[in-house]
Amino acid sequence: METPDPSNSLITPSLQALVSEVLDYAGLFPPADLSLRRALQNYAEYRHEQEAWMLSRFVLPVRRLSDLGTHRSLLKEGAPYDLSVLGTGGGTVDTFLKAFERDLEAIEAFDEAHEERAQVDVMEVPLPDTLVGGTQAEGTDFLEAITRTLVTTGTAKLDLFFEVPLRREAVAGLPALCAAAAEHNSQQAVPARTVAGLKVRCGGAEPTDVPDASDVAALIVACRDAGVPFKATAGLHHPVRHYDDGLDTDMHGFLNVFAASVLALEHSLNQPEVQTILFEENADNFRFLKDAFAWRDLTVSLDDIRHARDTLALSFGSCSFEEPVDHLRDLELL
Image (spheres, rainbow, N blue to C red):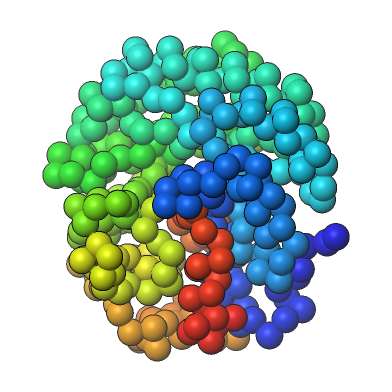
């Protein structure tokens, strides 16, 4: 069964551009906490739904890769599966690199076992604690060690997204970390063995897990200025910023985050200007036109939206595919 083509529907082209392949399905993780089989079955079904064009990779811990062998039949259907794995990580550079080498061995074993039916081409992993808020030189040395490990293990392609906690010293160190990632990316051959980017957590089980809009804006601007991509995760089930009764706090919206990113790139917005878009709670101020997207008096063309999505704001992880889709329907955008 072929994936439905959004161009054949009445969905506004600018919405298609902004949220195409935007959602990495993470049904294994809280609060969904599904079994591997159920999550994989869901993902297989979502790939054939009308909104499948919004779906990106299936997310699982690297330690669960070997478990996919018992569900091989689900991987035989449709196009090959693209997977993003959560790496083991480590608090120091040395412990990180040792775990990273083991993770690469698990990925290689999986790729060999599943041949052309599934591939791991992205890893998301916490930045070592000792590098949080560190210097550009420290980041550069770390990424050089990463490259040596990839070469030694013979890994052909694996993009890496380092999760950074948005606490004070980490936010202050974002420009240095992004500069190191940009330097690393610029030295890659074509095609690149690995592109380095950042990952931001936008929510969690506690109110304190939701980062301030000013800190999310700082990450967007730092990545934009350095030309480094980022991924987001957690807390982005709703399109627009809103108050959550369960957590008793304001939650970020995925339209806010991705609109802020594409507008920041197109209009060279500063941190307070990006923060204003992240604070937007009126869905009517996000206007999806045939040939452009607009927020208040700022617009961005379809080509520039696609460019920003390809190079800056890549995707967000969610344990639910239905909730973001249903909320877009509630706004009459789908």
